[in-house]
Image 1 (cartoon, helix red, strand yellow):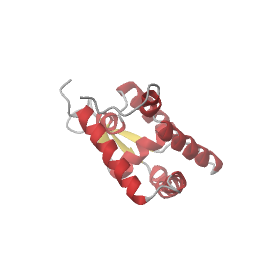
Image 2 (cartoon, one colour):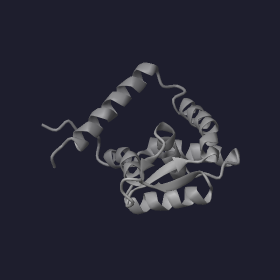
Image 3 (cartoon, rainbow, N blue to C red):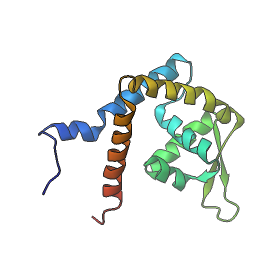
Length: 150
């Protein structure tokens, strides 16, 4: 039996992530207003490097759910901005590890404050217990799709 409680047409809006898109747009606006010449996509790569510096481009693909050409383009642009540098792996020259530069490290605090501010605005009138339920449901949806054999 289906557990789909969406009316016809609602599912597409849900899947496209209207809320996620709205949050990303707001955060991008905050970056622009603050004079940060950084896209949300670039920021997402930096975010994962702040969590674990020196990971490979493939690990960045996995972490950000982007394909190799997209990550290559993003890393190229971040290198041009002198926020990251590529270093060939000592054990396998085919693998590039991506490291933050000092300039890339310096962006963490400011951008994370803007991200926190944006999420606080997005969740302003949402009760904490509803946020917990939402996180739980979205994790289940993700797990169902990632862990399925189909």
